[in-house]
Image: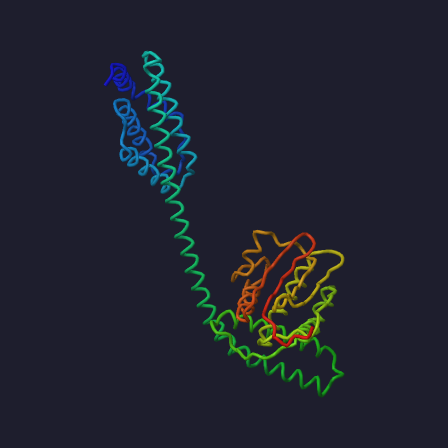
Length: 373
């Protein structure tokens, strides 16, 4: 050990109380910090490390032990890591100042300054890295808990839906049937068409819960479907909703496009996408438009349902097909999730693109080989 090192260590020991007092006066400690006392202890331990580093380089383990201890305390105290970094920098600046005032020649102090700076920088790095690791682990544990809770919600929803559908759907089916009989026997009665439409919508919503609550969808019967006719029937069914929402719809579907699929499942997808468009368009003034187009590309449909409603933000598009994600005040967040599952069941995919002018949902599913061109 050099004479300069010996003199400096003696000088620091003689003024240790003053150093710690000045450091405590300038650092930031939260009122709610449960480790207030440990802050002083850690400062004293760091001061001891500085004195030892003046004599010889410290091992990585010696620095790591204190850095990791401090990081864990900062996490448990639930304080911002910036407070810790600020306090460490305050300690470094005070020690550098005291060393400068030790009376030792600057030429002899220069390598000591470098060692002290290196020690504090390494300590800060190790502590912040450990703090970040712990925080990331806690976040992953929270996400795991949320995922598990979400699965439990799906299970509960499935159990509730099973009971709900059996208890609710039977009387609903009876009401729908009697309404149709009334229409046949007394076509002059007003409002029956509106009642029929609303009952069908209610039946559709119940089907949504039924689909999302069961792993295997109820009806897997497949048949050849002429897409144009199926879409026209869906639009006709939604005519009262289009009229009520003051929405115009432009339909342009080419040729005799045929797909092999489940009629009810595809109808549910089309209903959901068009109804969503009608809802979105209520947020805009002026001309409210929906465009439905369909063509064949490389053996797959290219069905597009577009509306000129509000733009969906880029960061939101990635989440809209997730279960229970919704931007509507009274939304369930299952409609688009079901659409995605049903289209994937048909060997297809559904995508969404949105800009300031149009929001477009694109569906691609395999077509039958006997497509009329």
